[in-house]
Image (cartoon, rainbow, N blue to C red; front, top):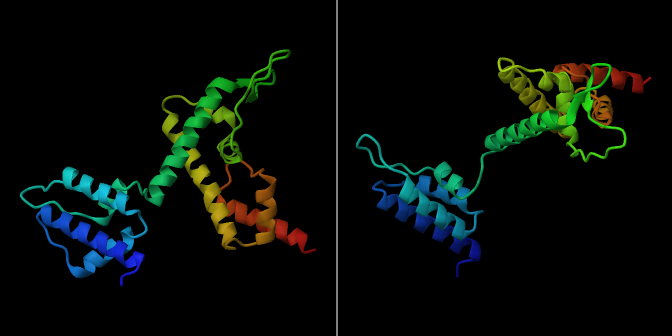
Length: 216
């Protein structure tokens, strides 16, 4: 008697095979096995719906029949690639930062840019994530966003993306004990005051200095 897991795999294999056949192509047993392995964690309803969309949406080109790929099925089942998630995250963070700068950031009497607070007036300012604040600080603080021209826009946006993704890379490296001077780097991350404009290499160097002081 087949287990539930085996039944699930057989259902996926049957649906993928039928889909490939009606699309006018064939699938080798090893290729079918890869489809099943990559899709078996999905609910059968999600797989069925994704394959139905593939049959409707994927067409052949230049006289060649349509080709079904695992990515085609996963994408239509709502599974997003990690790289796409990372792109979406920094773009949302950028939009949030730009909106925040345009609505809540002003210049103070000293000419510095800060969140606006008027005497006797209550303004509810949305709380930004620490990662967005750290990223803004590293690209030159709010001045970099408030003062950018249309020509500056793509360069400031690129710096924001690099700084935002570097924060994540640093945290991942920290979790894997991949950075030199790990104790110092933990102290640096906990402080949430990474100097602006510094890249991961600079952070490594600073973490080594912090560790050296801690070992004395």
